[in-house]
Length: 121
Image 1 (tube, rainbow, N blue to C red):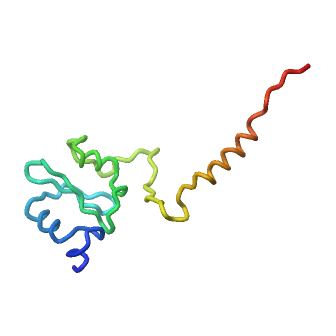
Image 2: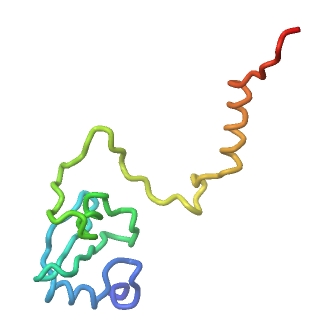
Image 3: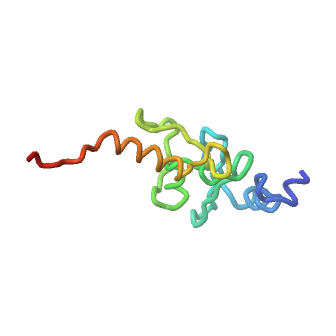
């Protein structure tokens, strides 16, 4: 309860909880436990995150709904076989993208693939 009153980055605040109770209608839940709401006349849409607030945890289907690109709520199992599972933002972790290391790998693979042309005399 202490976190709900004073911190917004650990989930919904007390004000958001009260606003959602009086003005919101629960539209759906996604597979990560996030709850999606809209007001009575559908002029506002919002998400209550399950756990820490991370915007990349909203699936593209729900993001389309939140931004009024899609007027209908996403179907729960609307996944294609080519879609990958979500990976969180890795910035600041050891698994973050390193452009210097990636450039060295690309240069080595380019040297192996390329052979300089020279005319025969």
